[in-house]
Image (tube, rainbow, N blue to C red):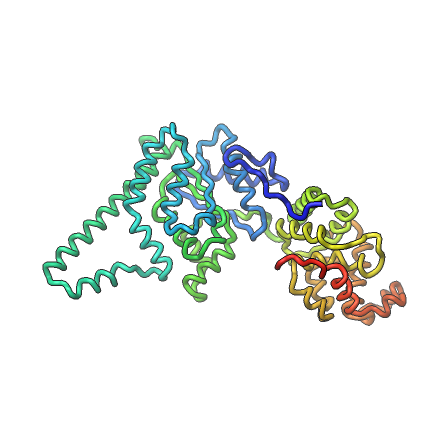
Length: 440
């Protein structure tokens, strides 16, 4: 039995979704491609999803999937922002990645050479954008120049000012050269309409250092706003908004701030809670169990529990992988009857989705209201009778037999149930979960 899923082996720009799409996301890929091919104006799309929702695998496949359609004109580029945030300047990192993407015999190499030269010339300006992001819009220019000029004569001041504005004029010219070179990559017609598109996928943006992430957004906005050049951001917008607050303070309207950079939000999975959402994570759990060689009986046991998750559970694909690893490391015998069999599946799901509750259960302080928040006992279980039994089981052991109605008491009033105590749930944790633990 394996412990974790091996990372998917995806060859960028060659592999599409066919070999790697376990979640039927081809329709999402087609919608994204259609949008990007149909718009000429510069566009930034945020592919939004929580951590562990499968954004990276989807985007790594999409940059190849898009190229499979002969009618598509776009060149795609995949850029992992997190892998590059050790660099000081995202402009140079992006330009370098674009250079590596185009083949040596590409007709666009001449334009790309000009692009790199222009990028080098405007480096100081890009650096100031980063400083502005780090200081809530301030710039070092005024303070540095002002301090230096105080002790200079009027003639020296005039020379210094003239040299300063020459540099600024040169940088503005370099910025125009950069945009012209970028525009040349899209091969515009006589009317300026791009005949080819360039789609740059920026992944893992929300995992970057806040200053680097915000500087990268500024670079996209100020340097790459060219017709036919589009960006797709693989991002958790909620976490990126936290980066904005970390940089500018809690008082800023972070979501509105991000509207400056993102025109369209595309959720990677359906909004709200539906059978489609449940189908996605159950399908991935089945794939996890097959890969980790978890037997069919164990899979069915946990699938039945997972089908009972309610609308506030919000499991991710990575949660399903963590659950698979936990199953692989936990001693369990599903032929057992009683406490362990009835509670272990629920406790392991809680360990993954709500780990702080496990400590409450260890101290016999977890109550049934917690369980009722996570599980919907009237949900889509393959056996409603089994679901009803589990609900009463949890309710009795966590809140006492007095929590049952008279009718329920007559149906379940065995000596075992009458003596139920929260300590028995704690005992199951000690016997089965505490041997190994996944890091939170």
